[in-house]
Structures are given as C-alpha cells and as structure tokens.
Amino acid sequence: MSLILKNWSKVPYAFGGAALSAEGGGYGFGAGEDKPEDILAYAFDRGVALFDTAPIYGFGHSEEVLAPFIKNKREKLRVITKSGVTWNSSKRVDMTNDPKVLTEMLENSLRRLNTDYIDLYMIHWPDSKVDIRKPLEELMKHKEKDKVLEIGLCNTYVEDLKKAEEICNIRVVQSQMNIFEQPSEDIQEYLTEKNISFMGWGAFDKGILTGRVTKEREQSKDYDKNDCRKSAPWWNQADVLRKVEVAKKLKSWGEGRELSLKEVALGFISSHPFASQILMGAKSVKDWRDVLDLKLPTFSQEELAEIQEICHSSPS
Image (cartoon, rainbow, N blue to C red):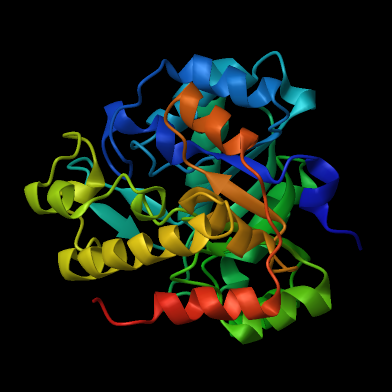
C-alpha cells in the first residue's frame, strides 16, 4: 500500500483551513491580509492539492469559505475535514467521538462544503470516554456509501491505531510536528512499518518559528481580536517566551548555513522520512509565496541533533 498523500500531491505542503476561520471565531489566528479566495487560488495555482479544514475552524466558517473555491475543481484537489470537536448554541466547545455526533458532523460538513464526498475524513482528537472502534465502525458505513473515501486519525496514539486496525485501514495520521514537538518514537515507527502517510501541523509553532511572535508582541498580546493566541489556555506565555529565545538561537544557527529561520523549521520536518506532508496555515498570498519559494533542506542526523540541543537549551 503506497503513501496516499504522496500520490495525491506533488507539493509537500497542504493548505491549513484554520487560516480561513477568522470571521467565525473559534480556533483561528485572526484575519488574513488578503481575500480567502485569492489565497486559495494562489496556493492551488502553485500546485497545492490538499485542502485541510475542520468544523471547529471558525465554527463552520472555514468549510463555508472553502466551498465555492472547490466547486469547479472537485476532481483536481482533495478535501480533508474532521469530526470530534463540536459546540453548542453558546459556542461552548465540546470534544466527543460519539458515533451519532460523528454522523451529524459529517452531514453538516458535506452541506457546508457543498460536496457529495470527503476525500479524507479524520477523527480530530482521542476521546477517553469512547473506544476509537465505535466511531470508526460508524465511519465505515459512510465510506460504503462513498460519502468518505479514506479515513485518518489526528493526534492519536499507537494503542488507538492498533484498535483501528480491527475496523479499517487508517491511511493518514495528522499530528503536531515541529522543532519543539514531534510524534512519539513509537508512533513514528508504527507509521513507517504500516506505510501510513503523516501530515504535520504547527510547522512554525503558531508564528514562533517565523520570528513574527516576539517577546514584545506576546507581552502586549498584539494579536487580532479573533486570534486564539489572545486567550487560549494552551498558549502559555512563559513557554512562548522561552521558545522565542530559542528561535533566536536557531536563526543564528541557520544563518551560518545560509538558511532562514523558516527554512530551518521546514528542513527539520522534511528531514524526518515518516513526514509526508506539511500543513501550512498561511493567511496571505505573500505567506504562501514565501513558503513555496523557500529552500527545503535535508539535514544530517548530526545537524538534527544540533537543532534539538538548541531547542532544549536554557535561555541565555
């Protein structure tokens, strides 16, 4: 069984739909500099064929923005969306893998995206209250009806992947992958052994590894009103400021090799053989141009070790 993402896309980047969520609120990083349709069109014209989204991105807004773009290109691109993170009428977020909720979320996504099928449907997060086999059994019913073509798991564990084997073929795993955070070694080994595609999110760690998140910006919370970095509990200021200092060291390390900080960040990911695809949450045409024009270096094991050593060093 071949790596499906490599078959689907010649470009090693996928479009991260959280970048389209600003107006809707929810999980997103504020308004972009260009119209969403212009950003989508530029990425597509440069070869980006994978478009990843989720209902929680803007409380459905990301999927709705994506819908008119994919309408006349449906056979030329792949749409990825997810279930498991939902919300109530007050927009209070809930995480559940209840099979009934999955079906409801899938139907709503099909409606918002105005499509008959989802190329890759993923379960967004593990749910300790629900055996992963239950939602996968439900998802297989939709796959048999061609509403879903392939199935994947996000932010998962080896234990769940092994349980999933009893129900279906997991073709893609999506998880955080950057200099600061990587999948566990047992996940990496499992993906390689089973020939499962991997899609990494958080390549630039929400702006830290681009240099856009600075000490001054973080301390003043100079983010767009719809930017979750203003108040999200997982955006811990002490941790962010430590990483900002590490990013400065990584930038200096890269300059010695004629590489930008972004190129160091992307090269770190692409130098891991299991990492098939990199999700990009770019919010402007310029952001996409910058990424697609960058060098994608391959680092030796010694260089990867040096990067990790810098990453775990104490702030000076």
